[in-house]
Amino acid sequence: MINARGLTRSFKIKRKTVEAVRGLDIDVEPGQLVAFLGPNGAGKSTSLRMLTTLLPPTSGTATVAGCDIATDPEGVRARIGYVGQRSGAGENLRVRDELANQGRCYGMAGAPARRRADEVLESLDLAPLAQRKPGTLSGGQRRRLDIALGLVHRPPLLFLDEPTTGLDPHSRASVWEHILRLRERHGTTLFLTTHYLEEADTMAERVVVIDEGRVIADGTADRLKSDLAGDRISLVPRDGADITAVADTAARMFGAHEVTAGSGGRIEARVPRAETALPELLRVLEADGVETAAATTSRPTLDDVFLALTGRSLVEGEPAEGAAL
Ligand SMILES: Nc1ncnc2c1ncn2[C@@H]1O[C@H](COP(=O)(O)OP(=O)(O)OP(=O)(O)O)[C@@H](O)[C@H]1O
Image 1 (cartoon, rainbow, N blue to C red):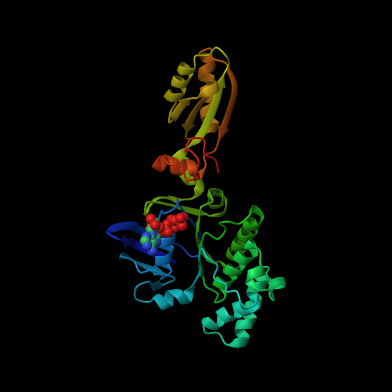
Image 2 (image 1 turned 135 degrees about the horizontal axis):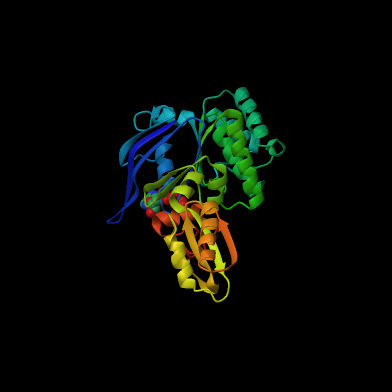
């Protein structure tokens, strides 16, 4: 559904060149739900804008929904939906008329456009709001209207640029419910950007991480976490234990890394599989005469993946260590 090779885009600002995207290679199969994840300025929107023909690439090629973005941009636009960061709805028309108008823009006659407007209103649970003006809708309702606008012409592929940013948790959940329903009912291929790590983690079957214009990881969230971050073991020895010796023992374990002896006598380590590593560590410590007061394990987050790859946290404004979703 998407095949991109070596897409780049740079911008000239005064005398400086910003390389927003530095060689994007990506293949997306029909029906996939792909989350494009990365920090501010990583190149997510620029990539999306190139794939949706809103912005010509500096170099590289891509076919989207079977059409070449450079030689057949109209073909691409006819086959995709695009929900940008800013709302696509105007303020003057009522919700249903706004949607019917969108259908007319795609070449539908009046009656079919109105019928299609009713269909998308129904499928996004917006029917009761059909006669309202977009300015009177809540943030979540408005975002659902944006998605409805992107679906009027029944595209097999929908791009969403941060569909849930700025919404409260309830509205975010509702937008996600509708996104997932779309996929289930119509097999729509979905390619979306998000800042919310837990959304990418739980909703997308494939996570593509981009940083400084380059894809740095691509796979299922589980695979990325196991391969790139590993589980975390946290252990507190009983009073009197030699913390440094315990940390050394942990560091000698197979595959253990990032071993730290923190405050309060807590030892932390990353291991490929905590469920087998922890009993082994406890056995070795017991043989050495070290008693353990507490031990916990936790699965890594996508932020741990980003941290392992870049040394930085994706969670803005928080220090890398201890960053949580
Ligand atoms: N029209 C433009 N002119 C100049 N620089 C731009 C333009 N659009 C994007 N950039 C720059 O390109 C880089 C990538 O921007 P982009 O908007 O693609 O990032 P992003 O990952 O979508 O970020 P965010 O999560 O903040 O939306 C940034 O450094 C940005 O300032």
